[in-house]
Length: 103
Image 1 (cartoon, rainbow, N blue to C red):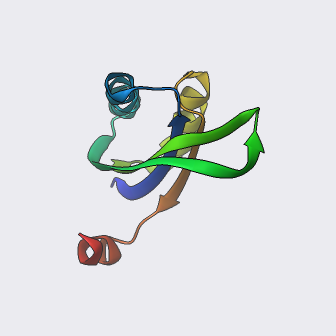
Image 2 (cartoon, helix red, strand yellow):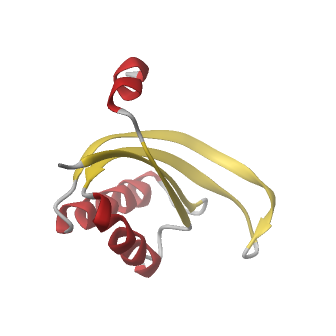
Image 3 (cartoon, one colour):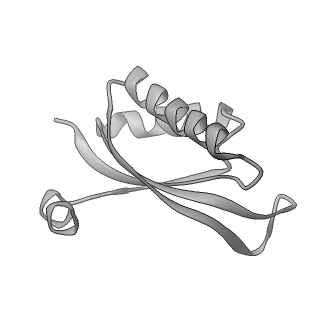
C-alpha cells in the first residue's frame, strides 16, 4: 500500500513562474516513474535562509503531498539530487487522519 508523504521542496529563487511550474512538473514525473502519485502542491513563496547555504541567500518553498511506496523514498531522493532545479527536499510521513483534518 502506498504511504502518504509530505515533501518540502526548496527551489532556487532565480526561477520565474513558468520555470517553477516546470520544476514542480519534473518532480511529478519522477514520482510517476516510481509508481507514485502527486496529491497536491502548495506554494509558500520566496523565503530567506537563516544563513547562506551553498552561496544562496534564499529559495522558493513548495509543500507537496504525494503517495509512494516506503522503499521508493531513497530512490526518489537519489533522482532529485540529479535534478538541478531542486535545491533541497525533505520528506515526512503523514498520518491519514491528520491529513484529512488539515484539508
